[in-house]
Image 1 (cartoon, one colour):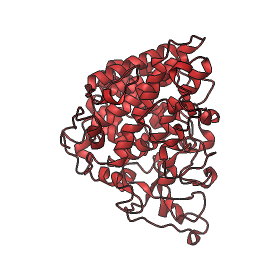
Image 2 (tube, one colour):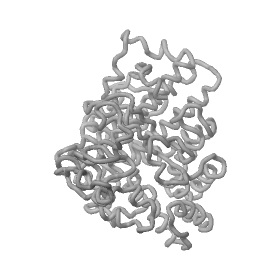
Image 3 (cartoon, helix red, strand yellow):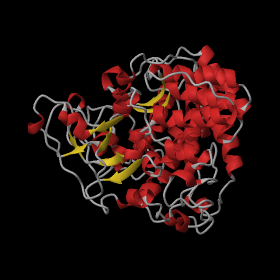
Image 4 (cartoon, helix red, strand yellow):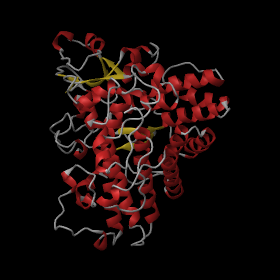
Length: 489
């Protein structure tokens, strides 16, 4: 899909939400409106690539899902360096926060691009159009799922474009209404997508089922979640990678554990002026070791630093600990010439640990600025996550035997003994296992919130407030006040 990225200047799409000028360079002007577009299969394909493109903002969920939790601190050069992340880390964020505004704008831009395709879905017929529409509806479900997880009920616009005047008249839909639309989109995607795709990074039936299972889990619909996740396990051609370490190297991506990845490329340079414009994954460089000089790794910006609490939650026998979290001083001490290795710490905090999954490595450097152009894909859903979600769904639905089968498959790869508990104790163990298996991948905050554990684990978390993030105040103002703010902000 990356090879086609820059043929999609059509992805201007009349989208006012996008802040990236890359999509506004349409020449000749006004030549790509719906009246003279969507006349061929290629037009729909290029429009779909434009809809995929907003997935590039997934680096924000990898960051926020970790630092809003107990897993990581914001780090960075100083406490005012990307200040919004430090506010989220300290649970002092409010309606003026650049990172949260980006979350809302990027995901609504994705929704808008999907809606533009759906608005014109009947203009031209061709074989296989239902697959394109299935992918479109998968993406719209993904973007709305991000929005509802962060902000709760949001304005719901489906299959149509809206003008600037109408924006001020549309209020927030309920969470239930958003989830109902997400389920409808994913059910269509499941019915129309195949288990495999000829182009890597495109949505499949397995991806749609897995995301639907996750959506059910977030609503405590455990029987429904168990049913669809079992389909992924029993009908899909997925399996755990034998070696956990192999999962995190760019050379091994799109493997048997991949259910849905955001594809990144190192073959285009980038700058800090527009992070959503990047073709590379900004997370790896931001997460990297500041001013590092030594083997294997490369210098980065020391953001999103794991805590000692997370590191110490692993058993010393757990193979995942050091593959997930880099203990920098321990790593240096076992090198052939430790005295020649150096690094710096930032004023934003230092824990001694780095995210070893999404980190800058010498063998994976992209074009300049290589802090921004990592080829590492973001793993939205991988098979281990499916097994753990299915384990939780079966346990919460009273089928502990099946739950144990699934969770113990994940533990066996990590060199850990089988669990044997049942009932609520098993529930707690599955939740703990999720953090060990998925540490650093952006799931922790949302898992703590949906399981009711956030106040117990996150310093400064206020029940009744911090389950949701605030809507950006500027967006409330632009809506003419038709959007109400979340409680407590």
